[in-house]
Image (cartoon, rainbow over all chains, first blue to last red; front, side):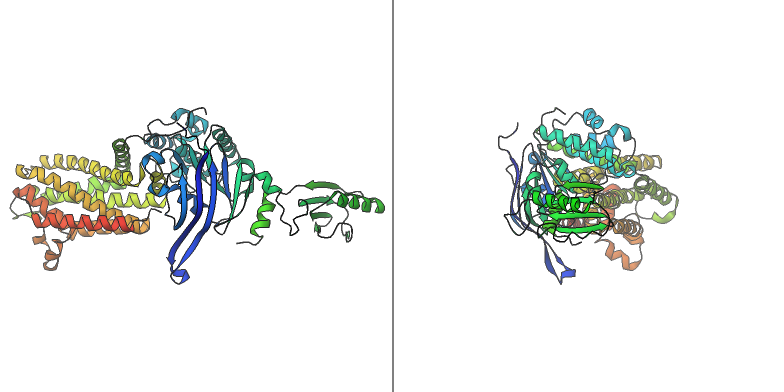
Length: 322
Length: 252
């Protein structure tokens, strides 16, 4: 049933222009400019980027929902632009806006979609697993955001796809729904499903993704496993070790000039709350504690934090609000 | 979850039949659509049977009225009903989602046409039964051509409805299809034959899908005759609207 190849999706040099747009004097707008990625079976591949980075456009081109301007896409070995029912039956799609008719009730809707497949997932199992039985008598229009997402996920899964696309899966999810959905995604990955998700939430990527592509302005800007990205050296000097942040509390107004090595950025974010960010070395820690010892200062708290994916992301895509 | 992965599509005819059935049920369950599809045509039928509006047109009042009412039904369901449903499905991403399932875009369109035909069949049943009680006696030679004409009319109006639904916002679709239903219903030669309309409208309505379908159905069911020019006009509208909808329909 499963093809032996491990690649489920490969995108090479994807270009997508939209328009012509009146706001650009009738010119085309380039949403995606030469983006490439590979997704594998049994892996969660995340496209991480700010809103408007081109994530949804990219996966919609991969789903055959948008026609690309250039580049190649291979989804389970086929071009999604000429997808037949056979290919579509092997690919599950959860759209960002759900795509479910507002007047429908969950179970008849799922049963209807299940009918499109020869051998669908047993509905009872899916319904119970995603907790849909708790709101089965409510029309889609009256469901909460989390309930809608769970139903949309069930609709994407009912054909037992080999590839699953999730566009912003945790949008609108309450903590319980989030746990249900994330656990299921993790299980499906173990079962061998190739899962491609977009998110602008670092936490999603950090919790779920085996491999992350960071996208900005329609281009790849970084990629790797979460661990690799966290270790990514973004300082101009490649010989420097990892960026870390030292957080501590002490009495307000201290001047740390000359305590740390050059390049370490020390700030007092609130009165008495300090942070030192940069390529911290053991010597920096020793210098700080020695400096305190010499002045009889006992810090109220002290912690060393590795970088979060968010820091990596912000370092790469800039801290500007866009 | 220990089910094996790897989906396969249900057969094409089953997918289309399912979608057709699902959409037909959704239409019938929608109160506003039911008013447009059944209640208003029935009111018009009774109205035309108790007033002298259609006297002197070569048949009893009810015989002249029924073909027009059936044509009106095709317009209600294909144009206004399916237009509005599709417009809102487009807004809510339903069209996009369904096009990613094995149903696909072609299956979705086929399902929509099937849904229109299913609702139309129900309308014919209800209108035909009430008309029979009112003394309707269609020309037997016109029954089969009449049925074919209704299917053609359903196709023409569905193509037009999808064209509107796929190109403007759903609120605009709602306004346009309802307004045209009233205008064409009253003045489009559909229930009131061209010769009873004001002079200027008389020539125009022969070229409208409403006028063409109304005329052709009346010729078939009253006189047992085939109105070739009207059939041609109807086919032309179907082709133009179909090509335009294929060309300009926006799925999102």
